[in-house]
Image (cartoon, rainbow, N blue to C red; front, side, top):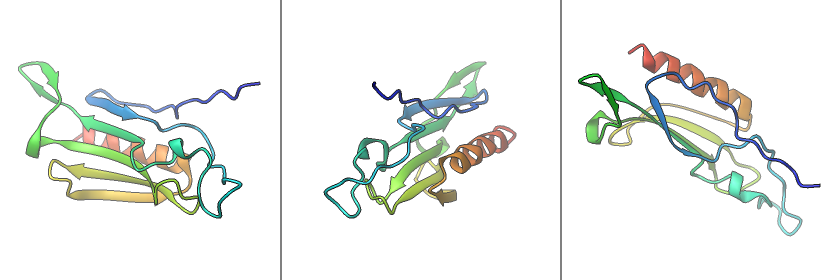
Length: 123
């Protein structure tokens, strides 16, 4: 029987674009050959999810560039390490951190991500 893997369901408000998504509803599995390496490491890397806040110009949505960028970035740090955790960052176009939270709890990360998008949408 093959295990079915699902992406974490996210409530994405209007005005956002998912530009990369590997944020799956899966637990890390320790490799039998290692004290720290995750067997299913592909779901626990530094690049799991990126969501960009869109802008409107003349009534049309677009993905901003440069200084206008507002990005939500999620990764697992350290990469592929069972002792790691999810780290969610809200960054600007220069990768300056505005907010961040880290946790092993993917559901806490999901809730935080959705809250931050709602807050940013009102700005």
